[in-house]
Length: 333
Image 1 (cartoon, rainbow, N blue to C red):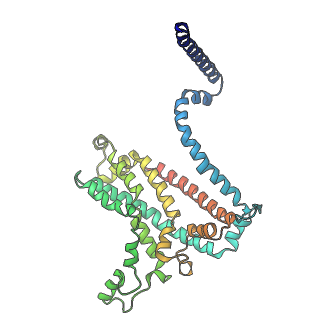
Image 2: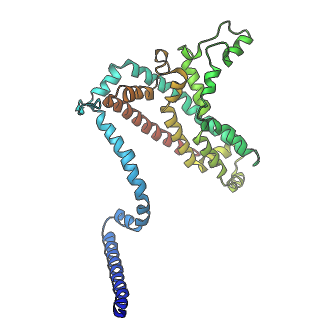
C-alpha cells in the first residue's frame, strides 16, 4: 500500500519533467526557426503572447466583419432573393443603380448634400465646443460636457423635433412664426419637399456631438501643458498659433478617430429621416442611400441589389477615410 502511494507522486513528477523538457525543447526549435526566416517570422515569435491574447478578438472580427463584407461583395455581383440560389450577373446591379434607378440617384444626391454639409460643419462644431469647454474651470467642465453629450444618450431625442416642426399650429416653429405675424397658416414642415432636407441637416448637426465630441475633449485634456511654455519661448505669440502648431498635432489620434466616427455618421444617416419624414419620405425628398439599402434589403429581400448598394457605401467610407487622414496628417506643417 505504501509503495503504491510513493510511486504515484514519482510518476507524476517524471511525467511533468518530460512535458517541461519537451516544451522547452520545442520552444528552442521554434526560436531557431524564427531566426532563420524573414523578419516578420521573428516578430511573430517574439510577440507570440500578444497575438495569442488578440486571437479571440481576431476570430470574432473575422467571422462577424471580414467574412460578411466579402460575402456582400460577392452577392453584389449576383441576383439573390433569399429563395433561389444566387445567380451571377456580373455588373448588372451596379449598372442598374446608376442608369435605371432614379430613386437611387435621388438618394445619392441627398446623401452627398448631407455629407458635405453635416460632415465638415459637425466636425468643426464638435472641435470648437470641445475647445471652449476645455477652457472652463474643472468644476463646471463635466456638467457642460454632459449637457452637450446628452442628445446622444437620449434614445427618443428625435421626438422633440417632431414637436418643434409639427404641421399644426401647436408646433413650436409654427406657433412662433404665427405669433410674430411671419406666416398666416401653419407650414407642413415634414411633408413639404422644400423643408425636409434642411430639417434633417439641423437635427443631424444637433446630434453630431456624440462620441467624437468626447474623444476631442479627451484629446484636448491630454495635451502636455509644458509644450505651450516651450512654444512661447520659441516665438509662438497667440492662441491660433498654439492651436495649429501644438494643440492639433498633439491630438492627431483623437482627430482621426473623431473624423472616422463623423464619416460613418454622415454616410449612415437613415434613422433620422425615417423618424422625421417617414419611410419613404414625400417625393423621396429625404431619401438616403441607407434608406435605399433598407428598402431593398429589409423589405424587398433583393439581397444582391442591396449588397451592391452596401458595397458602394463601404467604398465611399474607405475613400473619405483616406482623404481625411491625408488632410489631418498635414496639420501643424
